[in-house]
Amino acid sequence: MQEDPSLFFLFGSLIILLIVSAFFSGSETGMMAANKIKLRNLSKKRHRGAKRALKLLKKPDLLLSTILVGNNFANILASAIVTIIMINYFGGNVLLGSIILTLVILIFSEITPKTMAAIKPESIATGSSFLLKGLLFIFKPLIAVTNFISSKVLRLFNMNARDANDNDNLNTEELKTLLDESGDLIPKQYRGMLSSILGMEELVVEDIMTPTSEIIGIDLNQSYKKTKKIIESAEFTRLPVFKDYIDNELGMLHLKDSHSFLDKIESNEKVEKVLMDSYFVSQSTALMKQLKEFQVNDKNMALVVDEYGEIQGLITIEDIFKEIVGKFGSARVELEKEFTKLKDGSVVTDGNSKIRDLNKFLGWSIPENNSKTINGLITDYLDQIPQANLCVQINQYRFEVLEIDDNSIDRIKIRKGK
Image (cartoon, rainbow, N blue to C red; front, side):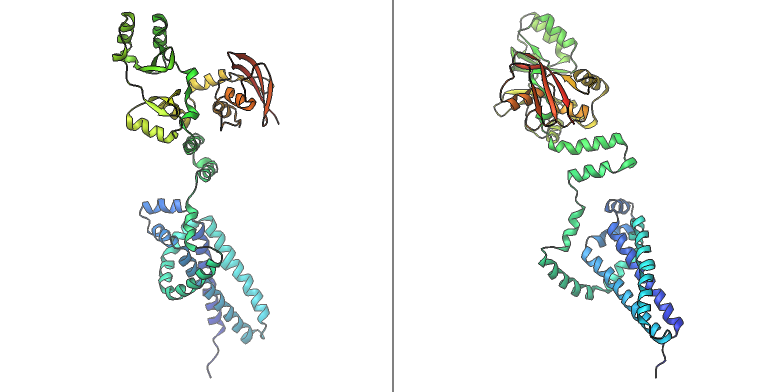
């Protein structure tokens, strides 16, 4: 008759199985919680463990099967050993043994290793990857059978284990949330810039262009003195040149050619030879695409046209850069002049002011989907040009028209309600 195993051997085997169970529990949490971006960064530095972990995570169904097979095998065998111990040495009190084993497994093989793995998931993932890779090869026949059955069950719920890899792909809004929650890891200034770049995919040229009413250019029908003054005070190196109105444009004047341009005006000669050809873009062009177009065509300024070819505004590469990095000091001062804050929390501004600028300046959310200016918003809301001073309520914002000039709102007071 074969002798029963000694109590020392049984307890030794039980401890080993509990350690094995702890390894699989910690590995599961470490692998699933590991930040793949950090692992990729480590793999670029030729970290072998990170490379192995990433390779295992490409097939999460096989990885989980390996971990679960090992973990369940260890726990079931541990339960069998406890049963033998209780029958042979403690009067057959199997229930007590089960309760004790459950508590031991929970504390030492589940909660503790999983908590450790949650604290340092990348370290656990890279450290356990070597052994998991070997076990994956050993358990491959068993895993193939279990995964085949599991895949059939998943199909009943219209699910595929391979879709787990798609969870790593973040959309724009999720990336913005990731930036917001990065805390001090990314400086606030850089977070703002990165967030602006991500938000640019929703913007088109029309959103940030300078409207025709605000374009500073040279009208050939104006006086020589006024033309010279415009050139001397120009903020940009290029100015559009036209006759009477912007749609009758002749070209762009580069300030380096301004002396020749003024000489020709003074001598009543044609100025077209001094001008450069204008560069036109559509108002519906995506902002990121337009930035690329500026680079490809070696341009930094363009006239914006609508679907009928009529000029609606002007955009520069500086406008796009401002959208990314924010307004510069002087531009910020201009905004403070444009939007006059009152003590009651309201703002007085021009009807031609951009809603987008106002929203960014005050952190408001006035709707800007259909109209780009405050004047356009009020006109669309009323379905007519306001003819007298009036008040309108749009969402939580109260608009009080103060002055009207030439069928356009000249001054308006805006207050945000509660």
